[in-house]
Image 1 (cartoon, rainbow, N blue to C red):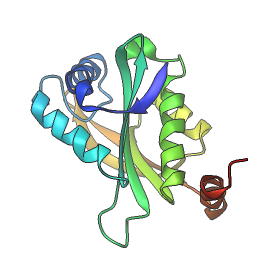
Image 2 (image 1 turned 120 degrees about the vertical axis):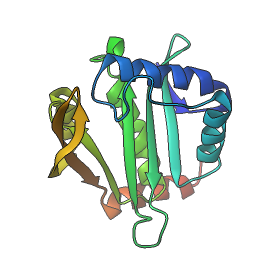
Image 3 (image 1 turned 180 degrees about the vertical axis):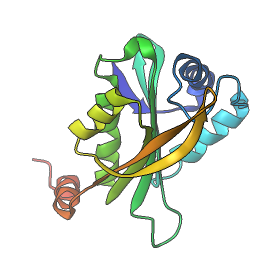
Length: 182
């Protein structure tokens, strides 16, 4: 397994993965076939993320296939620039194989390196496996977004979750970046 930042050549495979995720599970925001993204649009998004330290778009690759992805974007104004909103998805065939953990660890390393203090996201209340994974990594449930989504004709709740990174974690990473190589 390789976790790396997305590159322009990944565009079609990422579109295919999003469509697969939206067919396999009701835990994604969009319904199957609702996403209308061209390869060119996806390439532009990848390039935007690649050219910015405030945003991350990474993929999990197994045997040449993109099986998972994670996206994180910081706020755009001074008051929320320290906070990043995250989205993650892993294809069903790869659940329970450490892909989600590897993506989270990659994103957290990026967040700490970029001095992000807070990572936040929502998760469908019924997605107990994902909630357990996030809790394993120290994410806390902050609140309930009641009836925030309508899935298969039913209103469902989302749980708002976040994790705060301590100043010491950021300082330790920054110290490693400036330490002399012997």
